[in-house]
Image (tube, rainbow, N blue to C red; front, side, top):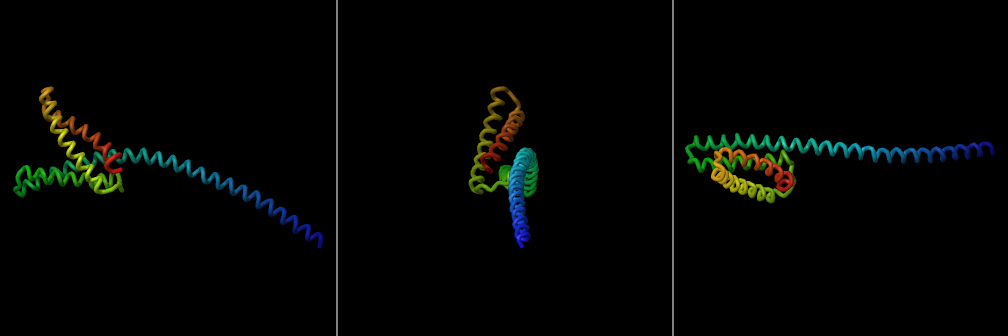
Length: 173
């Protein structure tokens, strides 16, 4: 009987030792598992951010190109219905601006910010672009003798750059 008791104690001691080793091994494995995915996740986040930024750049300018076609198409359609140029242009600009806002908010930047705040800031950007563009085209034409189309082209490039920056970091944040 003592032999059986001694054997039981030995088995229990071995099990306790193995449990300690297993627990320690599990803790090390868990610690490694916790840190390794975090490092992998960090790398994935950085890669996604870089890819996400480039995706947003291409999407933003793709939306801008599509907006041009929307504006031209709506303008042509309104003219075909016999509306005056200024009314046709106003409707076309409103439709293309709405298209631009909705596509960039929902697809390009996937914004969840306050909708009405974004609308107000977007409208301010449009007003600024209109006022600045009109001034710049006239100023460069008068000051340097540039053709107005050159001033318009330069204005569009500047508006494209600051428009992306403002949409990404201010309007749709």
